[in-house]
Structures are given as structure tokens and as C-alpha cells.
Image 1: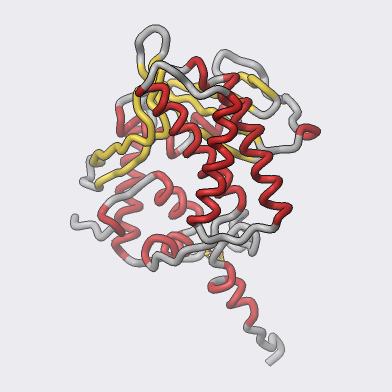
Image 2 (image 1 turned 90 degrees about the vertical axis):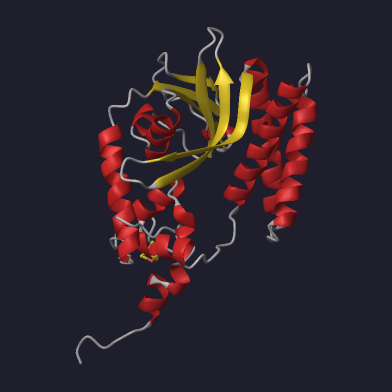
Length: 280
Ligand code: SF4
């Protein structure tokens, strides 16, 4: 079958968007309508850039940035991101975000990054599903373990901690494992909650460790047992996109509100504004 896909490929974020709300996928990937970045997105982008620079320096020189140097990098990255994205932040939002990126960077470098042997950062990975659909991914970090084996690491900057189930059933990481052939995947989960809310609730296992109140490390070995289901999902998604039919999500979907959907004003919010007389 000849598929018609935006940019000619599928990615984990495109598949997740389609599964969350097909209409949202249409706005974002077919019509390419941008939405203003949220403070959370800007914070996440700044931290990704900081860690990428940290590991790149570790790979290309014998030295690593110190914690205080890394914090400076994080502030510069945040300033770059907020300038280039042409976004408006209040002084309070900016000050809070700068404090968060510094805090999370310090914890991350001290508790995890300084001991990691990096092999590649933001590595482009392309492959093709069995049905012929091209796939594209960018891997945050490929690392080497002390026993010489390789693994993938991904940074997640969230308000709530990831759970082991979330990792095991993650579309993104099942897909990464299928595409790269690497089963060992870990999440470096940085948590933005205020110190008072950073409760340590996880059951400590070999694969889930709360290294600090704002840093959880999760690790799972993907054995390929979900590959068949993923193939079915990818083929179905490609057929749906090619058909051009993008229905809205359910009325009670978590994402279908003005807070979580950047297209609210041109979609459900706009339709809701048209009032009609039920008695007529
Ligand atoms: S408003 Fe609801 S239906 Fe419309 S794009 Fe957003 S999430 Fe989907």
C-alpha cells in the first residue's frame, strides 16, 4: 500500500498524538499549526540542551563540566530557548523556571551524569516497519555500562514521577527498542515539584530507584515481546492518516480542555461558543 504521511515517516510523538486525539494530530502534523510553547516545554528543552552539551564535552575532552559550570550552562540554555522561541514569560515565571533548571541540573550532574560513559547524544535513528512505513527517532543518550554493554537513556522532566508500568508499556521506548535493537532502556526522571511535595513513594527495586527527592531512575529490559502489536499499531496508524479521516477524541478525554489542548480555541472551544436553542 502507498502511504501518505507528513514528512514521509512516523515517529513516537506523532503516534502518541494520533492515539491521544486524531483531530489534534491533524492540526499539528497535517496543517502544521504551531502552538505557543509552555513554560514546561521551555524548561525541558533547556535541560535537554544542557545535558547534551555536558555529555558532548565529556566525549571530546578528558574533562567534564563541574556542577556550578553545568548550572551556568543551564541558565544560558534557558535564555537561548526563550529568546529563539519568541515567547513571553512574566518575570515570576522566568525566575521560577531559571531556579528549576539550575536545581535539576545540579542534582542530575552530581547524582547520575558524572559517572556515565556517553556514546552518542541526540542520535538520529531511522528504520522501516515491516509494512513499509519509515520510522524516525532521536535518541537522547546512548551510554555504555561498566560491563561494556550499551543502553539507551532518555530524560523526562515531569511534575509527577514516572512509574515502572509507564516505562514497560511506553510506546516511545518499545518503539526505540524495536528500531535500535537495544533492549536496555533507562529513564532519568527529573521532577519539578516544590521540595515540600517531593515525597519518595516508589517501591525501591533494582529497576526503580529514587536517587534524590527530585530524581528517579527507572530501568527496563525490552525483550521484543510487544513487537507484533507495535507493527499492527504502526500499519493501522499509517492507513488512518492516509485515509485523511481525523475524528475528535472523546468528550471526557484528559487532553480535551483549554489547559491541555493548544487547539481548543479553533476546535471544541469554538464549537462550544456556538449556542443553540434546544427547545427550538
Ligand atoms: S479540542 Fe479536543 S477534540 Fe479538539 S483537537 Fe483538542 S483534544 Fe482534540
